[in-house]
Length: 365
Image 1 (cartoon, rainbow, N blue to C red):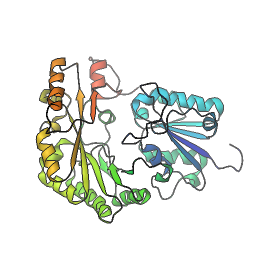
Image 2: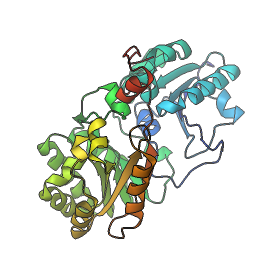
Image 3: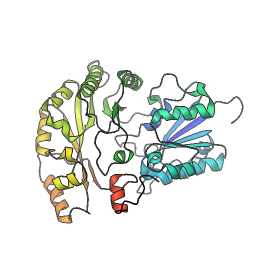
Image 4: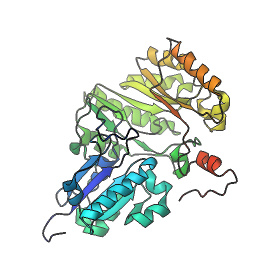
């Protein structure tokens, strides 16, 4: 780094398009927000920060940007490990002195391999980037008042993003969070308000929590009302969140959400086969009746959205076809917004069960 110049930090959300396309996907919701939360821990006066999201911006192929940083911070889904390694190699090719940092699901699933490739392997939450910045550049380069750098984003159809909790209180066997085994926790009011202040006015807000409902009703009610206060003040027209199936067992939950401006809910119904749900430890979705939930949400002016997961190793083609056909032929329920197959992501219980039935597969690589 040249003397007298501000340190330069490039934060990248790594992504490898399965269609082998480098084109940006700017209308996809939700967007990756981790880079902007990471940027919030870096002092903007003493440090230059840039963000590149390979989903939103497209594949990073700019030599000028590869040459630019003194530090590159990479994050992304577990499947993006190879792409993250490529990006680090490109940066090192043009600047051998660049510091390469990896964090997020990749680092937590494969810490040993990551430690061989990157200078820092951060297995914690976004706050850990502050320790890395301090170690490399000094404490003055760490932000005193942390808030996401939403100013670095470009609006996507007027959708703003917010996070009020971390992790999940359930352990579905196909979920990467189950492999990580980290405790479910909620943000403080001050931290949520700091995010909302940084967000500014938006058309709608999407809460990015893996499980907004959680296991603490007092915390749930507090967070709903906090967001509701901002809605009543006109900061946004409405908001939506992801909840687990147990949320719908208490009718008063929908009333509380609707009274505080909630306009949409997503839930992982996953499958209509009770045995499938039990085998993947998704018991909290056993009562997720599509007709009942759709009607209950509609009665409160809330749209209902859900995802489906198919597993050809435990269900026949005929059984899966019957489920899909039943949904397609029933005008009383919405179509799923997500239709996927079970994927043995590294570190998850299903990966250990399917890759090495004898239990010899390590929990992390």
